[in-house]
Length: 301
Image (cartoon, rainbow, N blue to C red):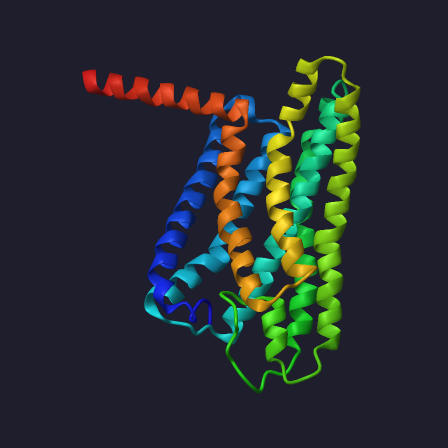
């Protein structure tokens, strides 16, 4: 059903979401390229940021193209297989983002509290395992919820009051008892959102204690600047996710809140990581200088 009740705003929503989607994709691809090209960004922190950018691209692509098609063409149908595939991938990637944010918090905690041993502890092998683990956790938990929802009987209404196939709207359509699937989804929400959130909070309490113990103001500023971008992204992502999945406040509100974490937050993330990160801004300047030099040389040739 998406936003069918807002007939006057279909075109406005389409243009706004399309622009947001294009900026999000281009922004995250740019971050991946900057990290790939600049050797100074070949560090664990930027490995995680690059992995997060890949996740964001996939995360928005699972839902937004179908929503755009819904808004512009009026094609509101989706196959059963397509619906459950979207449910599985969307939830899997969302959970992976939650755990990757926890991994990034651990990385910042290790860098601030053990700066002299950071390089030896955060080896390439450990970095690779930490980057892969969120994907495995996300896809495993998502399979559990998708499996129990797919086992429900759907013999009544086929109108999903949302702009993508999510757990609660699908459960509302079931004509069988959804108790087991609802318990499974609640358990998955705790595993996917609450546990990594507690982990992140714990690491930041430790980080803040360390920063407060630093005597110089400049030292405090430098220590906090290394994790300010991650803290901002985490706050945006978890703020809306907790409201929607832990404390639901109604379908209509949930649809607009879902737009925030499926469109707005992924749109802002590239800007947060570039505008608030000196290393990335330095990489952008170097790349710009190289492009300018290339264009000048090409013009003379």
